[in-house]
Image (cartoon, rainbow, N blue to C red):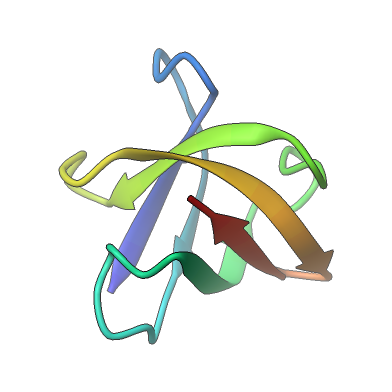
Length: 73
């Protein structure tokens, strides 16, 4: 599924990514193909959801390695 990552306030898109997780509601959402990678900061908060803007949930980036990351609810 295609993922949209917005700033903590949800006012601006920060990055896009893809996920092979079963659904957007998993506790730890694993994403790949993060673009751009430099705007995602470890231990920072974001609104993460589907690329059409639905399912947006506050999450914290708990792991980042290159263009992959994990966001926890």
